[in-house]
Image 1 (cartoon, protein in one colour):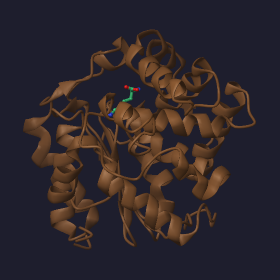
Image 2 (cartoon, protein in one colour):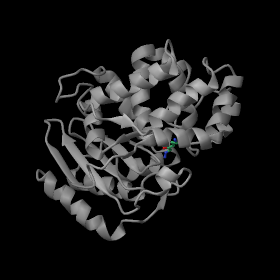
Image 3 (tube, helix red, strand yellow):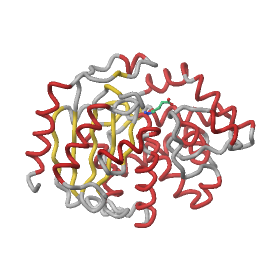
Length: 307
Ligand code: DON
């Protein structure tokens, strides 16, 4: 168990024959054109040791993984009143589903489905122009990862904007219930841009380290959130981080994690390590197929499951 590099190398080797499985997201060309055989994994232990294999230093579109960062920012700005705007329950529905919103008066089930993350973007916008809010998100992620090179891919943001009919529908629907306080175009401008953050597995693992270490990044010494808040964000990642695949992920992996349609998954082994994996092929719930398998193998070999 202590030889984490051997474990990570072993996972990389064992998964080689399966790379390319799953379906790469094709709703925008920037995602459709990514090599389906890419695979990266980075593990960072709370004492700062880094273990990685494969394409762990290749940037990819983190998409919905960014929803963890915007939730953390919104909680910092608005505290517990954040929960007046989004719930904390798993949705059991697809990430972009609209059905529950009608019965639940425009209040999204949780901050990780698209509707919930759009409501969170509205909260991050408070007191800002969209440009300032996007700048605040980028600065926050750079601070978390301690890496000034992290940036948004502007062509991804533009494509999201051009094809995001469903997200416009979700946002307009919420606005009709009075659940968004800023213009839909502004809120979605923030949402599309944070989904378009480009990061490597190593940068993502660094940025999740505070969640593995009780709210404080042990490498920079920055206290990002309280211990209680870190615990609670992890609870939400465990119950809601993989949409209608969250139960399956908890069953197989047993770690809080957040997926993105770009094929990334950021996971947390509380008190032990943060992990990021990337492989573009998705399963039927829109979560990385090989990435989930890699985390299942890692959890089995390290005994890091929270259960
Ligand atoms: O809003 C969307 O649909 C995308 N920008 C992000 C969705 C996403 O990553 C869902 N994850 N599996």
